Image (cartoon, rainbow, N blue to C red):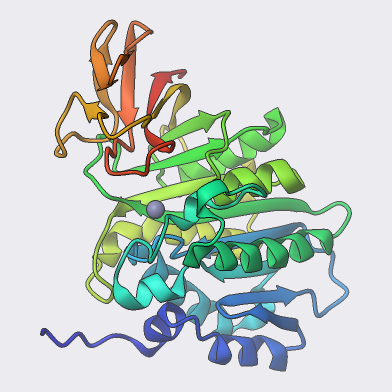
Length: 336
Ligand SMILES: [Zn+2]
């Protein structure tokens, strides 16, 4: 096996070990709380007005390690000058057991379990983890300042190549003013596309948006890579934008970056796998945001045939390997 020299901060975050970071912020007078393994909350230790309660999550899929590395470096740098942290922060390492094994999940996709009713998935290994995360998230947002903005950014990397290497899935509901601030942030983070999604599918961000009215986004920041081996040069702009947010540099929310607003899309239809007969009309090399024209077959599933309904639709997250009853892909249409 190849030996990877991994920075200590990356190893610690991947192992859901917050001790070094927690100690720094506690020593600087912040209220630090570790409500469950892999969950860190840093609250206002001073009288300053906090403009935002920000939840950052990584590793909800255990094999998506780039954002873990990026966040580890970000937190380590911030911990050098803790007083720069200008908001209430919660960090979640989603699925430490899966991260340890370099797998997407152990029993089931954690990012389908942020629901009260989980049906056949009620007893999978990830269900208890989802409960712990939901409980801590509820407590965090319940403690937000009355006037504070509530944001949740869930950091992922995609399984397949993408026409837009970085994109965001933004669950509804989202108010117009919040959507504008988020669009500005995404521009600063060099996120190239934004998909508005009306349906939940049990994702973490859909749950926070609905439950707490947070501005939520699932950020896809490139491709799956092994821990310690990610090309961090691909994360420079998202990292800088997150860093600005943590230090309350309001420009990332109030001012667009010239020429770099993300392209806008909206979910047109969800492709649900109904049976073992489910077949997708394209192969595994199909990139995210591949265009299909009206009438084209997307998938067939026994008597059901999914076809493109609009003049042009783009496929996102095609994955025929999901469990029966779950979403095997999204079809989106261009808005802007
Ligand atoms: Zn993911």
